[in-house]
Image (cartoon, rainbow, N blue to C red; front, side, top):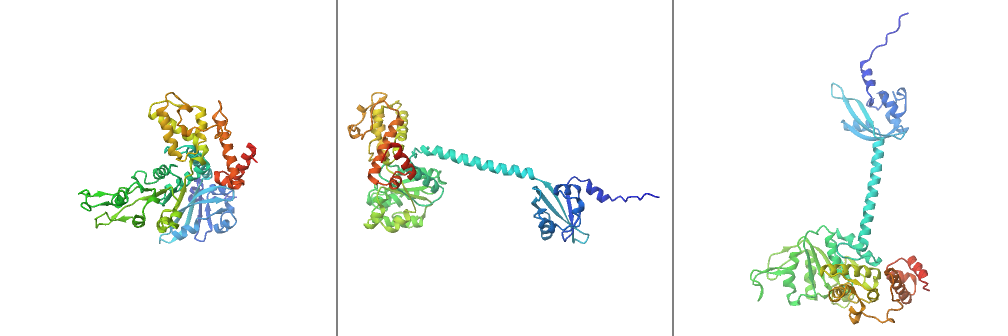
Amino acid sequence: MREKVKTFDENEAVLHSLKDDILITNLEGIILKVTDTTSSIYDILPDDLISRSVYDLEQEGIFTPIITPLVLKARKKKTIVQSTHNGKKLLVTGVPVFDNEGKLWRIVSYSHDITELMKMKSYFMEMQGEMDRVKNELKRLRDKSFNNEGIIAKDREMEKSLQVANQVAETDVNVLLLGESGVGKTQLAKYIHNHSGRKDKPFIEVNCSAIPHSLFEAEFFGYEGGSFSGANSKGKMGLAELAEGGTLFLDEIGELPLEHQVKVLKFIQEKSFYRVGGTKVRKVDFRLISATNQRLDTLVEEKRFREDLYYRLNVVPITIPPLRRRPSDIVLLIKHFLDLFSKKYDREREFDEAVLQQLLNNEWKGNVRELMNLIERLVVTSPSPIISIQDLPETYVQSKEELSGISHGKQPLKTILKQVEKRVLMEAKKRYKTTTKVSKQLGISQPSVVRKFKEYGIK
């Protein structure tokens, strides 16, 4: 009996010799041919794939999405990421095959297993997110107590103000800085400018209370030559025009007379103006920050400040707390200014512990500016490296009774601070009664107030 000779199919032999996953379908999505690699990828025997519809296989969850309909619609090569029932990720490319007449005839797809690559990508994304989180946390911790603009923000209330400043810095929203004289409104305005997209452009400060009323318009908007008696014959560029591309800081805005308020409002709204004596409209691109130590809402009620200007300025208000409500910042400020002026005047100075106690218990009506001026004065005038009580001006020396129980002697700074904290908490409890009100005034959480009351035995 003659042995049946098996017909050699060159195309089949070539197809199965390939180590790649190759799958061929007709236009209806019926699988016509697959390589052995294809069956191993899907964990299905070749005979169980032949004559099956890719649409049915997708419905059964064998693989998804399918490439066939995408190639049919586009009539050109398409690539997708496909998920399989056994947890693999495949990069699948579908290619259209046309007959001699240019009609679409078959769809050939091939894939590469990218499961491990996708896992690595996911891991990398997680690591990148973790690195970003760590970097942000480091920046937050670095900025929490001190930053390169000299702003101290360890106190919770001050930290909140600085956080708002950080949030608005990258936008051009109008900011109104509120707080007593000397709290650092100008410093915070510069901080916002230096952290904005305009940091490489001018920061122009206009002190509305320092410019004589009669000269305000000429100083602010500038003037053309010969506009008035005594004017420069060539004219002069105003402060507003100098702020082109940068930040215009209107300090002491509450001192601006009513007759000038309407002109400033129009300038802010339109960002255009005329020089005094001029007829040419001038445009200025600037970011506006204003500041005041007054209650503008009260001035509005008293008809001393325009309501429309108030609302134009008061888009994002940021209140800077007075220094007497920032006891945790006082020590940091003392250290900062002591280092600053010791280097500036080349004089190494330290504070005696008794002096620190006196400084920590001062009311600081002039706030940070007053503290800075005093420390500069002490560094310059103290005859010895250790600044003692004798070096303090009399107005800063309090009696033992005035120190309200703050003990003297050789004590660590940490102990002194705890005494100050206890005194502040006792005064707040006496004044505001409830822990909720105390937490609001001191800028700490209500549970923290309860914990600290318990720690210090405050009832």
